[in-house]
Each structure stands twice: as C-alpha cells, then as structure tokens.
Length: 315
Length: 53
Image (cartoon, rainbow over all chains, first blue to last red):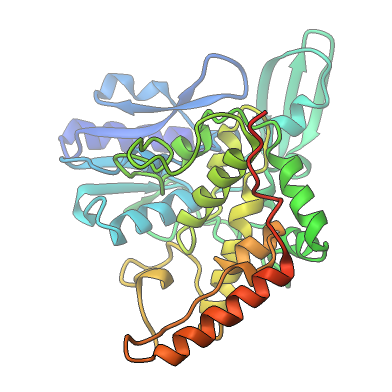
C-alpha cells in the first residue's frame, strides 16, 4: 500500500512544532521484522521513528483514553471507530484529540505469512500490493490481498469515520451480501459441535490477557479477571475458567466491538478470539441495526432503550 | 447473552429472563416451575463442570 508515511511525519512534525498537541501516537518499527509497536512521539526530531505499513494491526485508540492534554493519533478506519466509541463513553473529549486519518487497505496476517516459511523471517518490505518476505533460506513475493487478516477481509469501514485531516485520498469501501459467513458456519453446527469448536479454539490459551490489553474497549481500572473479592473467575488454566474468561470478555464488548482484530493480532498463541465477538457483532446488526463507532451522537444499543427493541426472550 | 451462550453450544433453556412485579406471586410461581421443568429436562450442565484433578 501507499504507506503515506512522509505525509504522516510531516503532519506530526507540524503539530508538535506549533505546540498544538503534546504528543503524537503512532507506530514504530518493532524489534523483529513484521512487528510494529505503538509509540508516543513528543518532539519534532523524533517523527522519523514513525512508520506505517501493512503490519500495523494493533489499535491505537487503546492509548488515548484518560489523556489530560491534547494529543494526536494516527487512525485507520477501525481505530477511528474506537475513538468514536471512546468519545461516546467519555474516555476522552473530542477537543482533546487530533485525528490523523489513514485510509487503510488492510493489514497482513503474520501467522499466515509465517506459515509459509520453515525458519524465522528476517526481512519484510512492501510495494503497493506486493509483499517481499525473506528468511535465511527463502525469499517470497506475495500478493497482499491473499494474506490479509480475517477481519480486514470483511472490513466495510476502511476509511476513518472521524478525522481532522486525512494523510491520503480515501479508498474504495467493500460491499458484501453477507458480512458474517464465519459466524454462519459455526451457527450451522449442532450444540455439541459448537461447544467442541470453542473448546478447541481456547485449548491453547495461556491466560496472558494480551487480547484484553490490546483491546481499546477494555479500559476498566480493575478487570473482572483481576478482582479478588469476589473472585469472579479462577485464574488457572482450567478449561472452565478459560472458557468463562473468553465468554465474559467477549460479552463486555457486545455492541461496542469494531472488529479491529487487535485481540487476534496480540494473541501469542494464534487463537482467533474474534469467533466470540463476531457473533455479538452479527446480533447487534441484526437485532438493533447497529455497527459500533460510527456516530459520536449515538449511544450503543445495550445502553439505551427503544420501545421497538426485541424483547421476546422476556417471559 | 442467550444468543452468545447458544452460539457456544450451551442449551438455550438454561438462561431465562422474566419481569415479575412483587404483587405477581402466581406469575413468579409459574415462571419458576417452568424454568425448573426445562432445566430438569436438560439434566446437569456437564460443559461448565470444573474438573479439579
């Protein structure tokens, strides 16, 4: 993709020089190839550290809540939707945040690429829609479209929904007849097969909580899993506790999840934890006609009452 | 919530919601009877059973 990094750096340097913002939150190169990490830039001299490419799969909205001064943040489509959610949930005021919007063409799935190589990847670069990935033994040229993250494949909000400036021209949005084929596949299973699917999904979970920490929605000062009085859920790797954690984490995101995929991106065990939240997103859309983070003036569906809300589950 | 539980393979009849006024004693009895009948029919929930071994 056209990473428009020069434009991002130029905008960031300008904002910092004028003193309009105290810091710019963006991505910097990580310690290994194909890993970018969030960074807060505070001086104009440091803007060269900023990068933007197809490996910036984390969600920067995670780092804006609770800020006191005015900050700038680099936002893809999903990041901007989470910023909207933060504004709606009073985690930050609109005036406190300067959004550098980046129309996004999708992020790559590192697990899919790593699976192509027998040894460790030592270099990654991209040019438009082509990715060049090499390990010591092998170099491969890949088409980016074939290695997108699953959530990017079905993304319908590539362009930021809220921004102060765009770093490049908007991209074309995708349209789908069915947004949730993955959910439908699980729904088609019988009860025991569904349970088995989720048991298999979470069996490698090490309870590191990376999914929770990467999620911009999870900003509670004390998470329910860390509470000790009462202790809502056991802390070990007992599968009942693991499943309870995943079920409750997902439900806390009901009607708020933007399907940014940061949870999956952060998971060291490659668990597709989106299998839980996707069902909630589908229900939000079907029952309430709701997609999270599109409008700062609307409260999420579980937070409001409308007479036409479905209530056939109440006897 | 029921939908997500069902999605995970938990029987739908294990979760019930009802709105009962403090003056509706008979409705309370009816609802509790219905719930206990449905749950009894399903049997114990082995899926969320915690194995301590």
